[in-house]
Amino acid sequence: MLKPGGTVGILEFAEPPGKAFGAMYRFYFRRILPLLGGVISGNASAYTYLPMSVSRFPSPEDLKLQFDRAGFVDVQFERWTGGIVTLHTGVVR
Image (cartoon, rainbow, N blue to C red; front, side):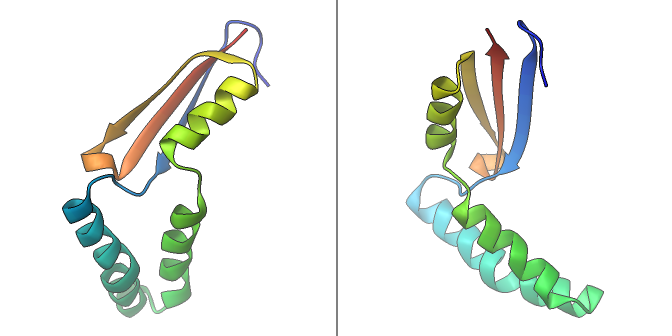
């Protein structure tokens, strides 16, 4: 719960934009990471859940629209690490 003037910040994994980097990222994130994570931890399902979850999460543009519709102002997002991570911020009216 935020009071008026309060700022919300959400740091999320995201699908990076761009054909070449996006394709490499998806291959690593969906094929290599679950394999390595499963071998190292003994729990492959924990490492297949995250890529599936990220692929279903709204894009940064769509999440910005949801913030706008919810009444937040000064809504912004900033992509980091080539778009793999996104910081979303907004201010409560």
